[in-house]
Image (cartoon, rainbow, N blue to C red; front, side):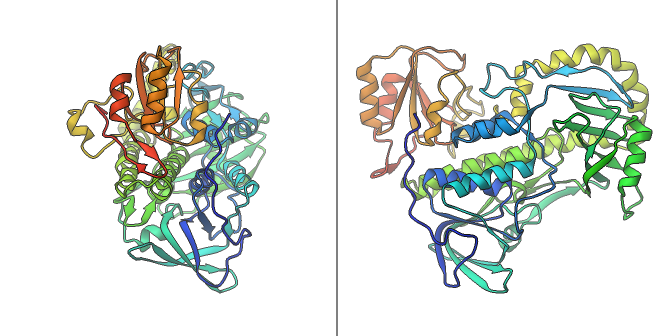
Length: 532
């Protein structure tokens, strides 16, 4: 049974229009894409007052982001929404890499991630459907997005942020918020107004995405990745037979418009792929950039406003969802549980290194895939076809590697849990502390409370468990059977609301070290982790 969340004070108005006088709130979210909507959904469940506004007039209709990784599904589970997601999502059953029109192999995703997460494999649910699902969840609990309201300006003061929002009727509304979060995409107005640099590079090529129907020439029920001497094609199945999302590059002289007609000729000539028609077609440039700061006083950046990178690895939307989840839990600790301002510093300290690593990795991989040098063409045209038989045998074995799946699914992320944790640990990352709680098959239901909590694994006497609850002021969950090797019998694990492990110690020591850890009356006193 999921514990009741803290009641959130009533917030007016409930509809999508704003009053002309100043509106007070705890958190103003600018941008209602996946990141902003996830932040709103988390704050709603946590009991934090918020207002969310977007210059658009409704959710996105055309989506580049497609895949949901396991960690994102775990977050949806904490919000009580995962069954809705699974009902709409398709499971990617396999990947079929190949050269031109010839696949090397079909590598099954059937056992990918089993035993590591309640949601193994890779799920396909495009960005627009994620957005509509989150909007519906907000509205069911009495909140709505203020569509058609653009951020015009912001000013920070000692106690909060004053923002000016312009509506479609020409009126300017003022919002007084304790904190403001920019989730307004790669061209973020919040980032610009806060004076935050957005350094990085832009790929010179033009990329396309097409929602194609009546597709031929692909392995039907699989993600397809094809190379030719000068091009690549990445496709995702969209449920119905012949319905695929096509992503690739068309090399044209700088400034020349890429048309769908030219794209169809390219995929037909290079990969033997054709399609009847498309519901939409779009082109874009790929950027690899990370904001210099994720926090500027009371202003935060999240999602594409904080980091952008290539679609390789299907990481972008998922990274934004995790930004939102982690930031919401930190804001709730400060606004509702009495934590100090340093709790909010952990957001940038934890999430910006993740973004930097991701951008470096995807940039290198993307550059390798799209390189147009003579050497790259020789490798793709001469080496890859000759390696095809070997790749057909090796790739299925690589796909079964647990560590590879943990990276792709974003369940292997590590945070240093305090400002000096890295120094004290001498740079060695712990297997448990600083990571998302290891799945024990029966321990994730407790995380739906979105609360600080203690988990005890293995044998433990009831008196010790009772004392732990009294001394820490936290709910204590006991799991007698240890099924995951990262969890140790006789160990108590301190878990944050976002599901990451703050600390882990033997039970007798933990009772003393975590005494009076967290209550609403006394605030949250976060102990420094032992080794994480």
